[in-house]
Image (cartoon, rainbow, N blue to C red; front, side, top):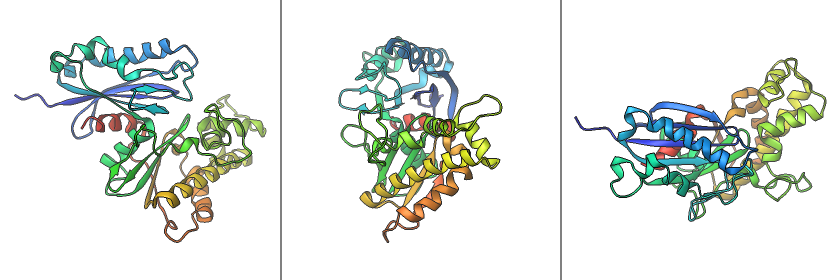
Length: 316
């Protein structure tokens, strides 16, 4: 019986490193994830990537793998195969494609003959856009922006019916456009970045600074969302500020490239109406030009699997 080809997928972020084998219909097998040691040296982060690969390589399905796809927090450099995630300071210009290709399970894979399996890289926002355009909420949209709002803020663009990563692989990197001209310095080197206002870390940081205190000691954006849903004034204000920043970034992008649809995913999107209600209100104000009014804003459909499905989409 012919073996159905599979893709190995890695999703690398500031909080977790996930892996799975993905079939040609976007279904996941053997999904796993480990925490990212984001504050440790780069070698420690790579060691976790290797652990994920080793576990996948230990499955009976590994022999059917034909390529490896990686969606990583960025920025990325497609030409050099390197990554420099803002939230992983130990990786600056890190040769991730080379390091993954050199892993024994990839380099000596039986399907690769004399060469390693091909390894494809994209930023996590581009990977999410590829996933949602293939299997999720951006299906059928010719021009869409797909956002990941999580530990950081990433995004990818679908233009003229195809995912467009740009020459470097960073097209649509919305988290690091300036939305506050006099804003705080950002680890990326700029200031007033969208990520510094709208990421999960930013939401929690702002709420804590304004006096919010979680009842159970959970100081994450998830806990802020729970408080906001219960009517906490400070928690609601923190989400409102994040939604305002997102609306400004989305409206600017829509005006620039003439979007019809926006898909919002990532862990912060799990807050539901706590995020999406103020986002819609602020978009009414910022998306004022006639050709971007009434943007079709949808919640991502693929949840935490989007990065993995998108990494596999790179290999299709």
